[in-house]
Length: 540
Image (cartoon, rainbow, N blue to C red; front, side, top):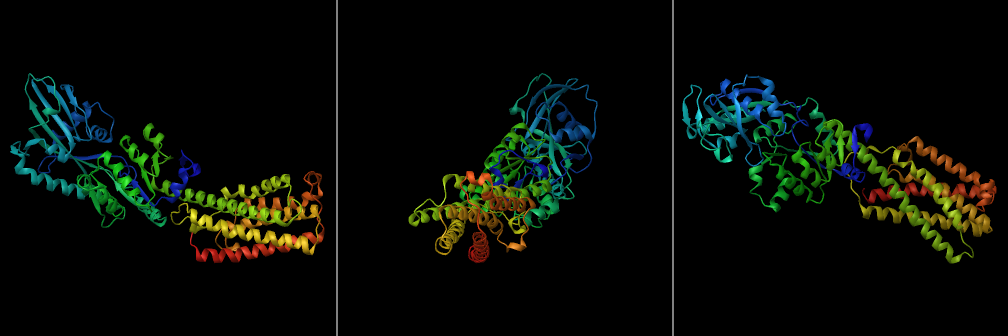
């Protein structure tokens, strides 16, 4: 995962990343370039306005809250000489008011300048300033303001409002209560272009069975424009204000069908994630890098952040991307699914082998006058059969195991364990019958033969169980093949070594070796047939 530029903070979450079928993401920096630029400062009629630009610069220059790309874009666009201005007060931005006010003085004049979400700014204005300088009633131009807002939004521009209010010369401080009866000055128009390669990344996510849902604080017009740019021709949109009037039950039903959540407040992000998760089939990932994304990251099944995010975000996240790029996430999902697929292989092997051995040992104890294997032989057998399974983590994975999200299915694992565990027991009993009735083996030869047959068959059967494809249509990794070869050779050679004598193993006669070979070949052939029937009847 690290090689794919994905840092895993919590190993257990790899399953969730592989099982993820919904990815919720912000817009800025993920779908867009992430470099917000000021396009223009215009008045009510849409003309360039130096006054609006100056007021925006004053507001951005004197604000002392958190550093944000909006204020940086304003200050980078054009610099004014504001040495004649003196800051007297400030009401910081918050997610309820959605605006920021600065109180400044120049000579004998004192003025409040407010910048923020357009509707929030318009709501505190009683007047508007025309291009000619004429002061108009806000009610007379409200429709013009809204039309201009929609027009710019549909072109993909983010729009903020600027308003001002002249204060008395004796006024020395301000509060939220002063944000009334202001004069609307104009619009600040920002742009953040869509990344050129994001469409391909979204297509790759769709091929992996992951639907992308955009959650943004921007207005629905900008969100719709970005959605269309990334391939959502007719996106279904739900806004934050609309969300406030929807019950939890209705939200759960609608959330899966919504493509874009626009004008969303930080506390609503968590509500959306929880609503999506309440559908049993959904595994929800959330990708964010802002401080207000912490609760949504925590609520998601797979919390994803980036290396440049705030520390609290990186602590909360399950995964940290070294690049804020959906393509990196695509590779991470693929690697997560390969990891999950290999984990399933190990579970299939371990459960079926242990289940089969349990029945074999229990059954043998009913009719044998001796222990079928000594405790030290059982321990050695477990050690040797674990060697091939230890290489499974680096094994190749069939493409169909990566194509769509998969989750733990205990019923399927139980059925697999029963079928292949009992199949193993059948061939163990067959081995017992051959040793007792055909070869008339003594106690030591019985133990050595079953010990050898069990390890060889368990090692080779790994090649059957690791894939639902036919044996020769799924190529294992070289490490697995090498591990199997080493274990088989070591098992065959062990009885003739001093170490074999320590474990009370006897050198095998050629008759016993031929019997082992025939039983193992029969087991492999039968397992392949049973596997085909099993997967045709029961879908993974």
